[in-house]
Image (cartoon, rainbow, N blue to C red; front, side, top):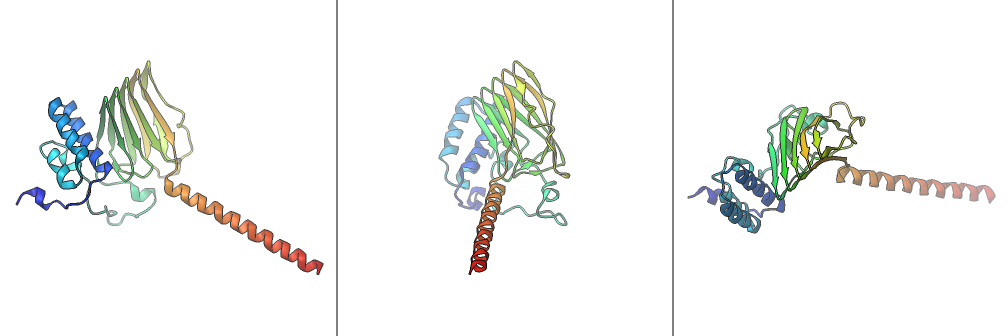
Length: 240
């Protein structure tokens, strides 16, 4: 029985297909795949419907083990809090680089940021979303190399950021530095260079945080309406 027959016949998501596509792009950039083989595998990756169909596409590549996600949810390390920033620091990195050559890549959702992540874009673009990510260490370096391309890093509102990158007919966005951060958050440092390209930064709240704020606002409006109603009733009783 082959190893593929042991894989669960679970449906692959768009994110699963993109992770495999990123492994194939890395292999092309490193000379492990010829262009025709890369195009053939990439087409098969986007057609794949299950994990079992995706697995053979990266089996002979160094990063194949990181191409598919774990089926079981990741548990918190023993003795480590399950929530808060302390519970999100530590563990094995999900991936250590992203390459966009006349294409794009994205890392978002529940992934683990390594101590050092390298972003390379040439006539392409990449995005790192750190809002729901875990972190291998409390000090993270994101090295951005953008040549006639672009990169963007999305941070939560309370994360520390330092930008040291160099722009040559391009630039690094410093607008999100100096923002007050919550003690205990990871510190992110952007380095590298941009040549006819740009590296941008932005801060956004997670969907869960926005929902919580919306629910709190609705509750405040409800309490205000109730207070007005009670005030009207008290006035009416005094007039009777």
